[in-house]
Length: 333
Image (cartoon, rainbow, N blue to C red; front, side, top):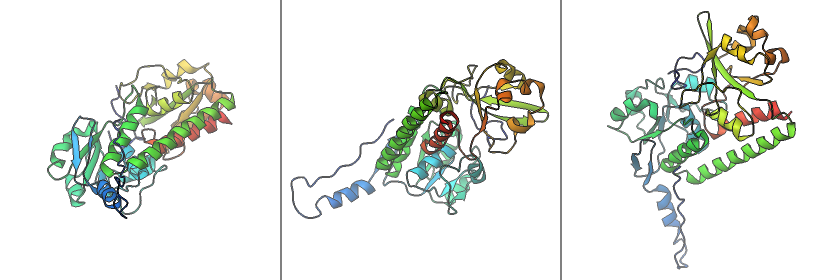
């Protein structure tokens, strides 16, 4: 059973509590600038949030030098206007997640996501380190010199609400609550726009089958994204049925099958959406010629669609917007 998108996968390297916005008034005085100093103090003063582990994380001022060990949170931070000073596995981020929010050349690599270098992080003198709840072992050594925010990363029960909570946590500690509101409003607008495009396309009754996979020697494993995955939740939100109804891992909404398992879809009309950011070409080359695969209706119909490179299927609002645009293209045309 899979427990995280960080696990074995050549194509996935390595194993709402919104704060109120500060509003400052002149408080009855007409003296010029009476509210200005208070506003500045509010923007630069202490900030806090409650993280996924239920810990109150407090900073004397909004974090500016942020190190982030997971790619979704990297994307979210950049979307809010905070370029991290350090990121885990920059090469992997650029391949798998960089399409929505690219890194600039000021960012330092601090090691792999599951094995970040504490020395490299300390050397960047960060105000804050952000990581997900599956990397808790590193919290204690980090907290000897820097505050740590732990986000959830995924929740199969409601991944969109979970993403909102993660966005708000990061906004709370970087002083970017107004930017978070704008970001989320844009995301909700994209959902509505995509749902309308799909309805207008008249093909919403065709299920979507979202997959990636990996090659292990002579074996090919297929990983379906269930309804509870982030991508699956996006598809459901815009009115699409998910073709994968099998077991999932309970956290990331991911299933597991193989070529023989795909035989269940021999006569099923569906649209296969596959991730090929690693260029392993499983669904467009490696499986071609396999008699089971070649006999699948979606293969014979040619309803296979490759995701844009670097559109992170475990990302934040900006990555999600790329995925929604893709669904609109597949179903709305």
